[in-house]
Structure formats: structure tokens, C-alpha cells
Image (cartoon, rainbow, N blue to C red; front, side, top):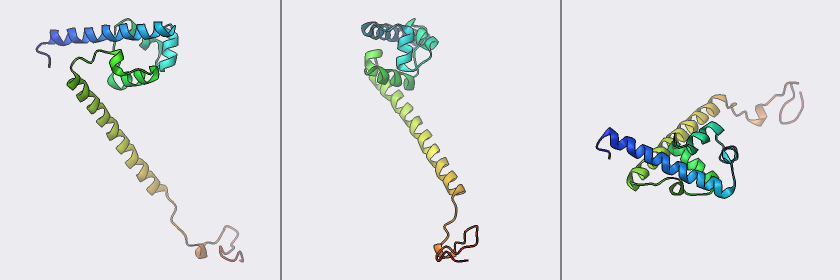
Amino acid sequence: MFETMDEHAEEERRIKQVFSRNLRQIARERGWNAKQLAGVIGFHYNTVRYWLHGERVPALPDLLRVSQQLGVTPGMLIDLGDTEAWASGLRAALSSMQDTIDSLHSQLEAYVEATALPEIPAGDFVDALGHNGETGEA
């Protein structure tokens, strides 16, 4: 994708500038200052300040969250440029999220299985007072 490290650095700088410009424009159109924007999108003020000044750009999952909170597409926040590279990054992020979900699901199933009480037929149940579960008699 990039021939040299200089090209990579230049593209990263460009992405930061575009994201910063677009985020500032959205905030300005909605009459928000940086603290209000941070509250709306749910990120710490310092993080949003870095974005607004073009010093950083959010990771893909955070970019998706920001766009969702603002009600815009990721493409409205950042110039997608090479759409195949963008799609590949998105697929990788979604795959990672699915792996996490699968892992959590397996852990939950194992926990439920390990902590489940065995089934006891009603006729075999005797409560703490010694009463038979079917008739209520001791």
C-alpha cells in the first residue's frame, strides 16, 4: 500500500487533518464546544481535544462509535481513500469483535454448566423441615 515510511507518515498526517477538520465542522454546525462534543460522543475531553487539534485519530472501533453517536457515516468524518484497505480494516475489526463475543459466550456457557444445580425429581425432594415434596407430610 505504501512504498516508503515517508508516504505512510504523510497519509497518517492527512487522515488526522481531514478527521480534525470534519469533526470541528460538525461541532461548529451543532453549536458545541470541545467539552460538549466530548459529552455527546462519550469520550474524555483530552481525547477529543487531541482529535480536534489533529494530533491523533481514533482507532477504527472508536471511529465507528463516534460516527454513530453523531449520526453520521464514518466517511463523513474521514476521507476513506483506498476503500478496499478501509473495508479490510473494518472486516478485521468485526472479526476480532466476533471472536471476543464467541469467547465470552463459551465462558458463559462453561460458567452456567459449572454452577447449575442438578435436577431433582419432585418426588425425591425433601425440604429443610423434612417434609416430602409431593404430599407435604414428614
